[in-house]
Length: 490
Image (cartoon, rainbow, N blue to C red; front, side, top):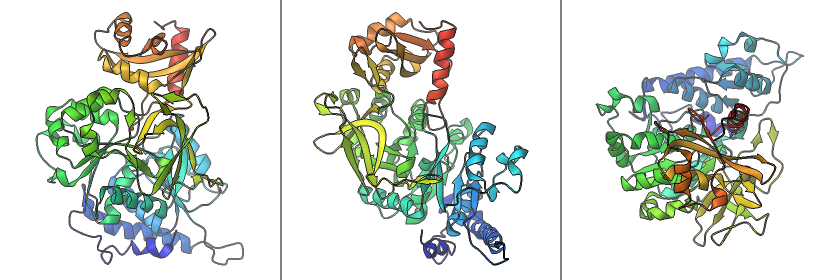
């Protein structure tokens, strides 16, 4: 990370970043003075560093950043980056077990955020020192629930921005952010706007969908000049409200990522003229590396959504390669493979380990590149179900179940079966009143081959999803175990 570049960001006026209404959020005017104040706090602590001979010494400070207020969070982020610290982005809503994981891994020098302070054991002094690596540590737990931090730098994040602006042919990016800033999906919206001189609206999804907010146009922006990023569950909520659906249709582009979407959601978005841009990316790649442009999305025929998830072409800063481990892995004539990624935006490793493999990042995702270079996602290798020797991908089964409109939510997994190896199992949220399972199965026979129809059906009140809509697989497996014990399987 080049210090002169980040330190120059502190002089925001000379960099022409300071403009009226650039940061459209409550108390946004406090951003610049707060950056300088927090940078001064870091420098003061750095200046006090001495070795055992009382000589000055420099080592990067480790900062836990868990501010709930977006202005304080972003100010701390810029100040920490400018001072070349190790900045750990954290979720202020983590509970004690999550904070225990973070505390054991990080051993911070500075804590910005009140949430962790409620656990007194985490604020002791004279704690053993952990490995020190400067950079931007972005949390990722995937579906495991175990927290780890992808190591990014200013360079990897800005490489993602450059790929984004080149792909969409933009000189500046205006974003409307309703995703958490500690998550890569929220942080990159800030990075795009901040580094290109664009505008950034920040609000919570709860505030966006509140009844009082829907009665007035409080943001005073021209939607057609803005990008907005959503996860599938948020898009579903907005499409359930006519006024918000109309509001959403006015955006230049609605980026959709964070987890697999379902067919009827995409069909409904298309029917309402939503300029949707399904994306593929992850924390390790600093958000999207493939995107289907909205004009292309709107041209897709509804029945095409039933086949595969088209995530569009690869962005200029990245390369996608398919690893074909099994010759018999095909889908409608396309040879499936595991997705390997090479990108300028690729993380350096998981804190504190730096990756040594220079062959790129091998994901757990399965898919294919069609003859036109469009990426299609089939699901995860680890989630693939092998039942009676047949390969079954849960997203396909989930999409078919949702398309019946007879359930509220569903997740499909495989559970051990002594006859078939694995049995396809649906954990679902029933409608009220619930539809009989035989009726659901009867409808599924029209779209799924017999071996793909779930054998077991487990009703639940809700599925264990995080804020990005991703299922926590470990919690889901616990639900299945408890259901088996109570003989709840239908």
